[in-house]
Length: 534
Ligand code: F6P
Image (tube, rainbow, N blue to C red; front, side):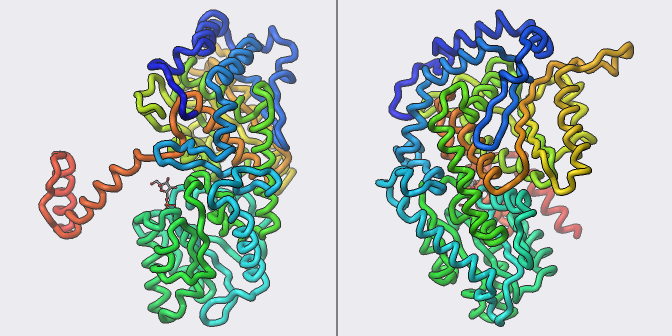
């Protein structure tokens, strides 16, 4: 992905891209997905992939065998396999930040030999051992609060990648929770979540895990400071070392906050926030499901890593998902993609994928500094079905835009009896979206021909969740490789943070607004008026 000369019109100037576009216009644009099923008798079995324990049915997309050949050609011409090897070997593929991206090392075995020469990789296994020691001490009651009471509440204070992954996976793996320990999450910076929570839990029995790669994210540090002062107020400053843990690159900041050395977990700088769930950022998950299950989660992700690295283009699930997304977005012209999970436990998975995709692919500049000449991924959104069926599915069925969907369906659920209807709902929706239906009443017509993938697996286990996480991480990497962008930086979020710092001072100290934005000026006046009236 780096050290390559990209032509001005990359990737639009690649032969495979041009062929793919021409093929769409001549062979597919005027056909429909249902008609492809009629002409290709084995389509449902042919367009099915298996990787680890996941099955991907991608037959309900506007593509045929020729499209698949052109996908492989494009992956080859864009040198995606070479980029994958660069990532696994620890090259600085995060070129703008001069760092490797080695989340795969976090779940590797020593014998996999993933980037062993890169600083920090050799700490992966000793960190896991430390986590294991802590988790078993927590479960046996050897870890206690400052008054000697056992810890019954874990509060993860973090935001973005330091929260979405832990929250998503803790909910997903509810069937694996150890008894007697509950996990809570505090992310938003307005303090409300934290204050609500502090009034509900027994503080003597609470451990706060401050998860922040940088240990400087305002929301997280503000929440951590409030929690610390509440604990200090209740139990004195000696309570800090019993009740606060830190996970960060920044040891100095953890130390200055008052976190004792044994409760500090240092993560490597090559772990991107949204790729950090397999690092010590997953500590809250490990506390809740136990280290044995956390290791199974890592093993699941590792299995998908191996599949991604080794499987040929046509059988490679992350590559297939990425190519379908690119085809739908950049050739067919869809602007968003929905992730719909047919299991309540995966309710937070779409939000987790939203950050993974949108922070990684929301770029307008390529790795060579030139402006991109195509859309780099669209809006990712979604939720848990069947809630969505009773709110936004109307637009999916009859809206003017065609929105491709990933349906995610665990076959088994907590209650197998009720799950039949859940399974039926998932299949019914993708069928209705693709086949549509006729009616004499125009407002009742479903035009159909709407694309979807279905990812099906037995049940939500730690291993399978690990596979799902790695599947989408690698999908995003492939999309970025084809687009010629760096998926591992996020400079776009910085400007707003800088402006907020200066506006906070203006508002708090009632200073005159020094900026040039007249709308901001007016809004500050309205805020002040409203505060005066209170
Ligand atoms: O502001 C965006 C971001 O930097 C994300 O990329 C990251 O996951 C989140 O903030 C939290 O950052 P940190 O873990 O450093 O607190």
